[in-house]
Image (cartoon, rainbow, N blue to C red; front, side):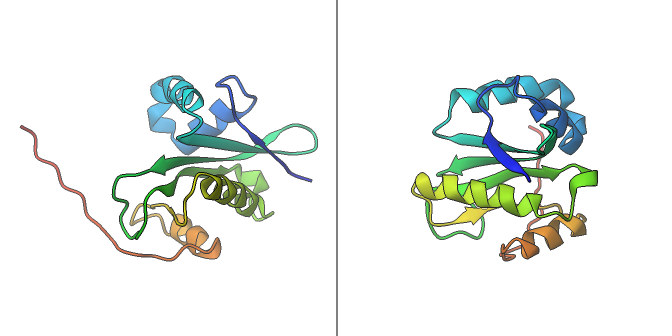
Length: 147
C-alpha cells in the first residue's frame, strides 16, 4: 500500500532523488529550491509517495499562484509544478493519489481550480493530465528577446 507524506525538510528521504529524476538539468538548484519551498508552507506544498518498505515512489509539488494562470478563471490557483512517479512504480495509481493530495491542499488554501502545464512535445504528460481529470485550455509558444 502506498502512503503519501508531506515534505517538510530538504533532507526528507527520496525527495532530492525524485526531483533530480524529474528535472535532471537543474541538479545544482534543487537544494536551494527545496529550502525555499519548505520555508513557505502557505505557498508551496510537496508530497511524496512511499511504499510499505519506505521507498520513495513519486512526488508532487504544488504552488499557490495568485498571478494570472493561463486557462483559469479564479485566483488563487493551485499550480501543479511537478509530478513524477518512478518508472517501476507507474500504472499503479500513484500519480492519482499524489494529485488528489495536491487537490486537497489547494482546496484548503481557498482554491477552486488547479492548473498545470506540459511541453508541446511531451505527449505522455499530456495524456496523463487528461487521465487525471485535467482539461486542455490552450497552447502557447513563449518568446524572449535579450536586451
